[in-house]
Length: 264
Image 1 (cartoon, helix red, strand yellow):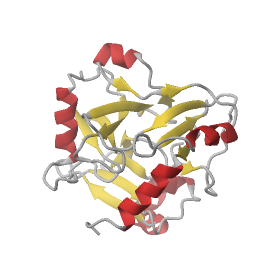
Image 2: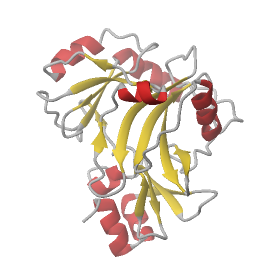
Image 3: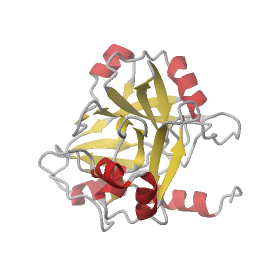
């Protein structure tokens, strides 16, 4: 028993799964046996759980599709048809950060970093020169962060600098821990990012807000947020179901940035 995505890969092979779910495939430049799978924003039907699991997952093609890194399954904005049903009695509210998801994972006796679209974070930042890997490690060491000891975990950070801004402006480089997953065995359970990581490794940990009792209450709060300073919230319940609740002003600014940019 394993992830739906991995079960299908073992039974049908990579090309069948890529065609079935319209997945994007990226191989690691140093270790080509490592493959990253990512759904297509346009073509993938995300009603399938296996497709949602392909959100930057990295697998070893030479080791029975063993999980090497596994950040988050695809999760949705409130109001979208596939948005998760949240158990509000166990829900926790975290800041939705506006940057680049970077996953720190252990492979070949060293720590490596990936983005959702690249197993070695080799994509280039807004400045057209720096790779996300170089920017991650530069920020990591400038902030005097320490490497973790537990190699069976992968760690999800948000990288936020002036070189990878989306909407929110970043006056200083930040690298914020917001997720942890045990990839040693199925079901690859998540762990909560706690302040212990701040004490142990000097890592900034995602901000947690006071509990709310319902989506309606949270929507009242988020509509008053300035989208130039905060994207919104992520709601996560005890079963690690997640829901994005974005500030309306952020959504508007993101739309204009994507549709009226000189880069398009």
